[in-house]
Amino acid sequence: MADSKDSGYDHAISLGGFKIRDFGVGVVEHTYRTSFGDPRITHGQNSQYSQFVIDLKLERDDLAGFIRQAWPAYVAFLISFISYWIWASDFITVVGARFGILGASLFSVVVSMRAASLTGTSFGVTLVDQIHLATLLYTLVGVGCTSYILYKWVDPEERASVRRTNTVVALSTTAVFLIANAVSIGFAVT
Image (tube, rainbow, N blue to C red; front, side):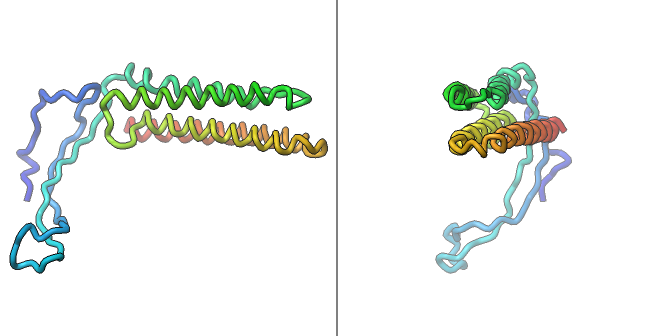
């Protein structure tokens, strides 16, 4: 049994941009895939022993650092959003610009993700990672939509339908992106 009442941690511990918000300890039964040399356990069988578990909840204490890491993803999102509205009566004349903008957006998100991962504060999939991944997905949907438009544009009877599809994809993916970001940030703050 863990002494959760009298357990603690050294409050002088520095986690570089994070602070410990909650701390707890406990003991759980854990199955190990070894006998640890116990002759009473048949070779190849598992063994069960108590495992001491430390539960830390971390909170970012550097809002400016978060903004510095997330801002490029939001700029890339806005650039991708703008690409949906690049349109001409002859779509072929603007398709290069649209693909170029989406490619630049993808590149900037990947570079930003790489820079954020070099901060050394990797604790699984962070909020910044979630924002970058959502932006990548949003931009890839834009590439897919543009590719679909280019594919369908050869048939003049499809052009009005394609324009509506572009608008629906733009509005729906933007709404999903914004809601997903709000939910991710909401979970991170609470």
